[in-house]
Image (cartoon, rainbow, N blue to C red; front, side, top):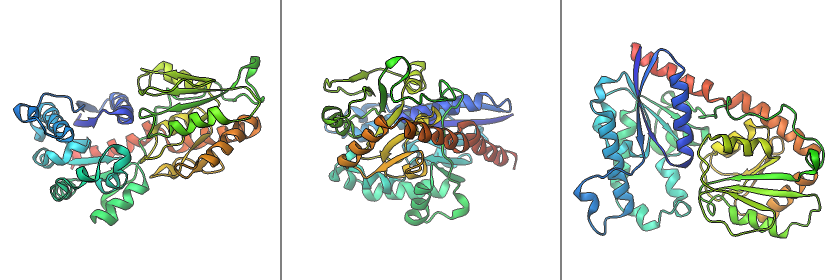
Length: 367
């Protein structure tokens, strides 16, 4: 048996990654897993209650407490998978057992998009030197890096000088036993069987950052005559808009969310800042064409013109054009959806992809 720890952030899409890891590890009879969820919610003592202390620092202190309480004596593990930004704040724990780092972006990449993630330039400068030193120390201690895509791998090599042999890009993928088409054949008529409208789906916790306002603008302005409806899954308040339904409180990997994917015809995410997109992979695994933006590692998911369309961030005219095109052209929806499904099955199966990481962790554990 191999005893591994999995230290994993739980925010939004990262929660999906954690759920998939739990399922994959549970299906491996040779693995005993200790799970350390990092929610940044623990009471971190007197320091965290000081007035005026930035919320980011309070969150980090809470995350550190969650990690220390959950990991305990790190040397008891054969290896630890670190999928948390707080890892750089616990260098002694990272160094105590072979450390495997899974990441959706590097700090340099985060800083480049900081404003749209709620990080002011002042916050970016605050403690910048300390953060860089802490990150460098973390990266030196790591046994191996598993960035989600080549975009992150490039930053590791070029911005941090990590040797290529220590880096293996692996997409987290999605649980394809859950995310799959309701039928192998998508509806091919201009409107759904029974006269229902063409359904567009948006899934994004941060509605504004994910480009939701652009999507509502299209819903108000489009002149297409074919019946359509827009379904929005978000945690944020959304202005009431004609032909639009908002679904709040849906959990990651939930049956209700999966059913929405299966009942939809087009997935759209005109995001303004992103590093990757688990929801795009979920949509593709359900056989949907995807309209999204050319950001971060997203071009490694969506093949432009084949499985959907890639747009420049904030390019409303192109977004409107592509949505009108997909709503009115059933043959295009069908062909792109089929291509999406093929690509997802070839590249984005979490059992295959996460299994690769588990095998390397086992190899280190046997050495």
